[in-house]
Every structure is written in structure tokens, then in C-alpha cells.
Amino acid sequence: MKHTLKNIFQHGAIPASFVGDSIAKHSSKTGIGAHSIFLGQVRADDVDGKKVTAIEYTAYEDMALKKMHEIREEIFARYPITCMHVHHSLGKVQTGEICLFVFTSSPHRKAATEACNELVERIKEELPVWGKELFTDEGYRWKINH
Amino acid sequence: MKHTLKNIFQHGAIPASFVGDSIAKHSSKTGIGAHSIFLGQVRADDVDGKKVTAIEYTAYEDMALKKMHEIREEIFARYPITCMHVHHSLGKVQTGEICLFVFTSSPHRKAATEACNELVERIKEELPVWGKELFTDEGYRWKINH
Amino acid sequence: MKILVFGQLTDIFGDSFVRMRDIPDTDTMVKRLEENYPALKKMKYLIAIDKEIVRENTLLSESCEISLLPPFSGG
Amino acid sequence: MKILVFGQLTDIFGDSFVRMRDIPDTDTMVKRLEENYPALKKMKYLIAIDKEIVRENTLLSESCEISLLPPFSGG
Figure 1 (tube, rainbow over the protein chains, first blue to last red):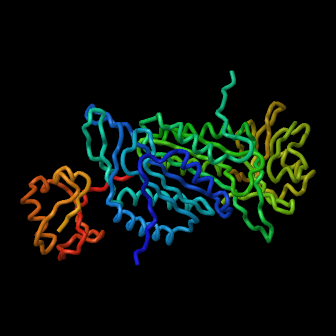
Figure 2: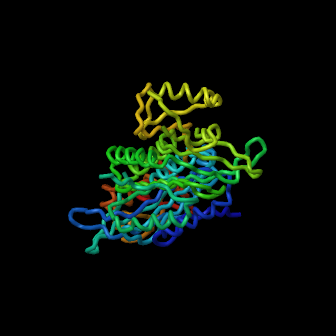
Figure 3: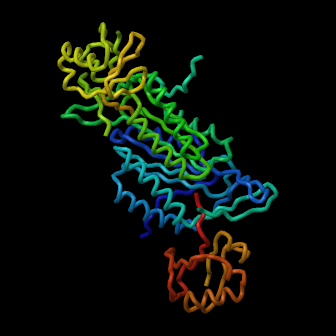
């Protein structure tokens, strides 16, 4: 029997209104006192005179979801948080648009903040996802995470 | 000539859609790569068997805005951030509603995250704002920050 | 002289301010307030003059904006 | 045997996978891939078997899901 893993991927940019709607859904959880949110936005970087206009994301989806499941379990075990939500774009995301949305909630602020920070670091380091920075002139460069 | 300080106060809860709209406004700032957001939500705490139903906020507004201006200048001087937005409720905010919204943005994630954390700590410690936790039975308790 | 009070101190003074006359400095102010409002002795608060917190005895003039600030609890 | 490739490796292989026959282990796989695709020698990547990264030489079977993963750059 195959265990179904929670999906984190969605096609294209994450709308700002989606973030607002996610926040609104937590108003019934009255044990929550703090929300911490991280958003990644695609930058119009200059690369040797060429301008990035979009990033095209691909992933080894099955492995990424398996890894994300492990990270999720570890974060829940380590921090007293109430909720955790992760959304990552696949396909093209234009500059100025949101490509990553990480959202943690807890009764007191320390847990939400620390869990959110750790999640972002681990997502960038451990998930098999690749960004291809597309230039105005149709050239590209593979993104490097620092 | 009196210097006009940026207002951070608004009456009642901060709608989740306001957070979404704030995020959307940053899509034209294509130098931004990371947004860090902190939200304070009113908890339905139990206090000796009494349930908190709302927090009523009051402030020494002139002093709070002066102090916030100083904090803002210091944070901008210390972190390479692009934007900083702070919104705090006054008056009654029901449990489950948002009372504090802190939002920082920067090209790379470290600055936004650290600036946001420091802002939240300083807002709670240094701004002359008081919360009165209102109980179901019309009693109350003055909130204590930890 | 009008002294602004906030938070839990409004419970003691029954209002958002208290008026006093002829107070030369903050130490005298505290002493006289505590005589009139004994509950104040048990309260923790800071004194601000013209929106700046003062921790030492400070001379007061009629133009000062004086305030008593219990522990902050915003957010 | 189908080997999945991702990111900048798709530029070298010209596709999202490459097929090979009779590879007993990961060391042999790397050696033979580098013979056929010399550009691979300059690339940094990890090998995953059944979605787990392996860092030592590992025996392979036909049922293995093999993948070559260049440095991750999500977010």
C-alpha cells in the first residue's frame, strides 16, 4: 500500500492572494499566537549584462516529496508548532512573482520563527529542485543557491 | 516645522487580505528575493478557568511612533533590506484575529529574516502599547509580554 | 501639571491622566503620587518626560509632557 | 537501465534520462557515463538510488531507480 505524501508543488507563481487566504484559514485555530512566513520572490538579476526575466523550476518530484515529508516530521518533533505549510512553484515564475511560500504557526513566537527559518534553509539545501534563470535574449543560466 | 512620523496603528484587527495586498504591492520591486513576515494572532488563553475572547489595545501613540521611527532607522542602518512595514492594532481584536503585522524584504533571505525577528522583539519590548485581555464574563487581565 | 497614565495604572487612577501642582522633580512626583494612591507602590512602571524614558531624578517644568508607563505588552 | 538526470545535467545528456546496460555498481556507472559524456567529468552531482543519496559505491539491480542530481537550487 503506497503512502500518499503531501504535495508541495504547484504550477507557476504562488499568488499573493493565496498567502492571504492561507492566513485567513487559521483564524479558527485560537491556540495560535504567532505566524511566521517566508516568501521567495524571483529577482531580476543582472548576469554579465543579461537580465533574468523568469526562473523555470523543475524537480525530482517523488524524491522531493519524500524528503519534504522527513523534514516536516523532524520539524514537528523539534518545535512546538501548531501548523506548517510549504508551497513551491514548478515551471516558469516571472520576476517579481512568488516561487516559495513557507508558513509556520505556534502559540508563542519563538517556535514559529525558528521552525520557519530552519524549514527555508533545509528546503533550499535538501530538496531536489532546480531553477533555470531565463534571460531576455532566450539564453539561460542554472541558478546556484548560496 | 513638525516632522510627520509614519503611522503604524490601525483600529481593530488587521485583515488577512490586507497582508495579501501588501505582498502583491512588492511585485514591481524586482530586486527583492525574500520576504519575511511575522503576524501576531490573539490567542483564546485560559486564565484560571476564564477564557480570553479579545484583547483591547491602547498605546501612548505619539511616543510609540517616535520610538518606532528610531527603531526603523536603526534596522535600515544595520540590515541591507529593501522594505519594512509595521502595522499594529488599537482597540478590540477578537481571538483568532491578527493584531500585529511585521513585513521585511531584501535581495537575499538572511537580511529580511533577521531584520524581521529583531523588529518583532523590539516592538514588543520598546513600544508603549498595552493589551487588556478581555474574558467572556466581562472581567479582564492586563497582558504580560514574555 | 498633567501626568498621563496608561495600561494597568488607569485602574489605580480611574482615568487616563492625573493632575498635580508644584512638583519640582520626578522623585517628588512619585512620593506625592504614592501618598495619594498607595496602590501605586506595588506597581512596576517607568517615567517618560517628553516621550523619553528617564531613570534618574529629573527636574520638571510646566511644559513637560509627563507619563507613567507600566510594562509594555504590545503585539 | 534508466538513469534520471536533472538540472544542468540535462544539457549534457540532451534529455531527462539516459539508458545503459549491464552496470553492476555506481562506480562502473560513473566511469562508463564519463567515457560516453566527457563533459560530465567537470560536473558536480550526487547519485540517488531509490530516492536516497548514496555516497559510496553501491550495487545496482534492474529495479533500482537511479538518478544524477546536480546541486539543488530551489526556492
